Image 1 (cartoon, rainbow, N blue to C red):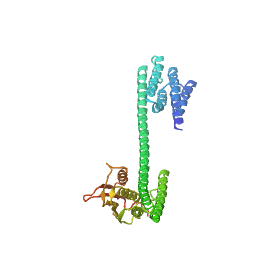
Image 2 (cartoon, helix red, strand yellow):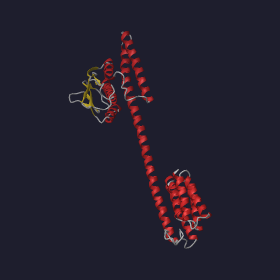
Image 3 (tube, helix red, strand yellow):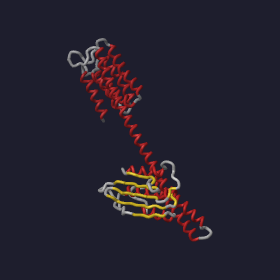
Image 4 (cartoon, one colour):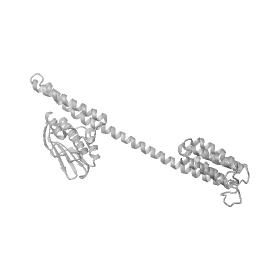
Length: 363
C-alpha cells in the first residue's frame, strides 16, 4: 500500500513538472512509477526497470527531479537486501545511467529553464547532484542493512544462548535425578546382596525399595526430557522425602525443617535439588555417612544447609557437575552458596535463596 502510494506520487510529480502535460509526460510518469510498486518484492528488477526509463525521460525532455527520486527509491531496497558488492555495483550503475543521459544532450537542464525552480541548469551540476543523492541513498540503506544484520545476529545469539541454557538445565536436572537415585539403588543392591542368603525379609525390602526408586527416577527423567516440568510443581515429598530416602540408605541424618509452603515454588525446587545433591555427596564421600540438614525461612530469603559431620574420605578434584549445578541454581535467584570443608572437619553446603516477600507464592 505504501509503495503504491509512492509510485502514484512519483508519476504525478513527473507529469506536473514536465514542460507540457502530454502523452510523453504521462508515459514517463507511469513508466517511472509502476516499477516502484514492487520495489520491495523485486528490488533488483524494479531498479533495472527504472534506470532506462529515467534516462530516456531525461533525454526526451520529460525528466525532472522525480527521476532522481524514483532511482533513489528503487536503489534503497537493493542496497538493504543485497550483499555489499552488489549494492555498490547498483549505485555506480545509477550514477552512470544518469550521467550518460545528461551527456547525450549538451546543456540539457533537468527541468525546463526559465521558471527559476530547477536544481540544475547544466549537465555537470546535474551529474554532481545526482551522485550526491545516490551516494546518500546508498549510505542510508547500507546503515539500515548493517543494523538489521546486527539485530539478526543478536537475535540468533540470544536464541543460541537460550538453547544452551535449556540444555544445561536439562543436563543439570538429569544429573541430579539420576545421580541421587542411582546412589540409592547401589546402596540398596549392596544390602540385598549382603543379606540374600540369611535375611530374606531384608532382601525383599531392599529389592522393593530399588523398584520404587527406579520408577521414581524414570518418571523424573521422562518429565525432564519431555519438557513439561513446571516451576510451580516442586518434587513430591520435598526435602522431607530426601531425608527419609537418605536414612533408608544408611545415612544418619538429623534435620530441622521449616514450613516452606509460603515460599515461591521455584525457590523450593532449587532448595530441593541442592539438598538432594548434598545428600548424594554425603553418601559417596563421608565415612561414616552422617549429616545435619537445615531449612530456615528468614525475611526475604530461604536458607538451606547440609553439614557433613563425618570424615571426608575422598573429594573430587575441583568442582564437579553437582557443585557447579548448585552454584548455577543459586545464581539464578541472585543468592549465595558456600560449599567447602569445615574448620573442625567434614564438609558443609550452605545456600541462601532470596525471594520477594510480596511476590508470587505457591502453597
